[in-house]
Length: 135
Image (cartoon, helix red, strand yellow):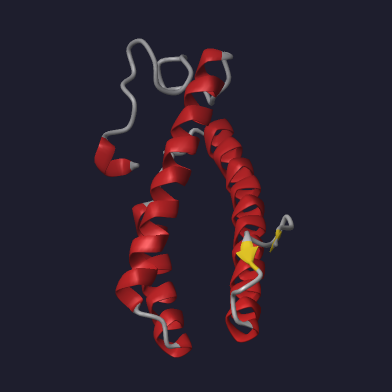
């Protein structure tokens, strides 16, 4: 017999109780991570919208650098490999920037965006998008 719940995986009855308990804890942590990431992305969507409205680039390399340093230090304090933590953050930030680029594009398509010096709005005809190094 197997048991399955939204926070658990299939576990055959013959799995020893200690292993089952450890896996249940892991499953609960995985569920919490999914919910935390969902909440994080809800917040970053708002940041992306604010950046688009303010005409800011989708990426902020200075902040990203500070975040990497902060999370590497947190990882070391927590006994987590800081290289892994940096890779994990890099993956998340890459996805966030992609979302911010999409939001900025939609905002421009809707005619939103701050006026440019030439009287236009953000990136578009006559005004290139920020260089990749600015994202």
